[in-house]
Length: 481
Image 1: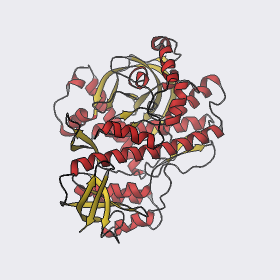
Image 2: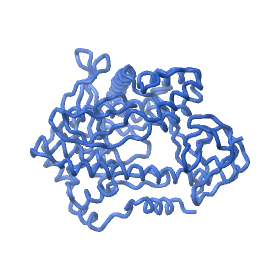
Image 3: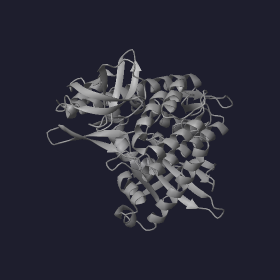
């Protein structure tokens, strides 16, 4: 079975268009990268010690970061976001292609980028050693973790070091020797440690306001030269990921606030108050804990923090249950002055997506809303246009999850085909008319419980036996024991 071909076919089944049209290729030929950069009206910030932290193999670099200590104890943070709009104009062929798919899809086998790689891994990627255009989101982080916006503006930046989560996380968490990707750049060690300090302030402040700390298990297939899945590699949370996650949350909240103050109708990212709260309360009761009968994000945050300390080995399982019950986020149109649901899990009231324009269409839309209002006047999009974009993005995000989930299941089924009859510890992840679903703990594999499933509830721990696998369809069947 060729997994790359299967991933391509699955994309088409879910309504994606993975093939780049001729019209897009023709537009790419006309782009003069140097001319675009030289004509930029942005500030020249190339002298600042910008750096990036991303996955080891990432080439579509959306962000760079810089921090500077202030005399009053605050930390000035600048987040440079790839200025995709400078190269992809509204209603161009490239834009129409991106608007059709709205998101990059990461299958673990191959990646289907929202934008052609000539842009997403080159002209609009904030690559090490290159001058690039960016939208800078600037804010001050106070000693108690509060943020104060210092503006949002275009700039030219230079990435002095592409660092990786894997290497930087191990260095910060295990106190190992300074890695060469840090030591080779003068003053970068001091810079990374200052960024870590700022991110810690942000995290602690959000925790006070009830932000949820969740640690779900993410796995990607490991394949040999013959294309066979030999293992599943776990993505582990570490301090390097914490830096970027907390910076991106602060940057997105700052952008949402800035758009509001400018009176701009925009896209918001919301996670509403969970309708499945009673089941979350039940899970707490099963662990001899008590949660309020009405949704309370601070109480849930405290509960999760206690459970991580009491039972760290099963915290990822608990996190998965809570994530499933909270449900996914949605894009909605926000009119300044009107109330919105905010983001329940992040404990922020105003939140948008703006930090990944190479791989999320709403982030590109946000760039245009910002730039049109500050330089051209008027609005880049009407409210009706934004409503249609939000609907399309929600639909495509759901479809992308289905593609990624199927490919994970196919890879897992290939790996598990020699373990029929084995028993595993599992956690129930879904109960619906379609069936009862569970994830085994090690290796982290999802499947359907097809025997003795009656009475199982989301979040419940169970012992299951592997009955059968169908790699072609990604089916894995369990029986509860």
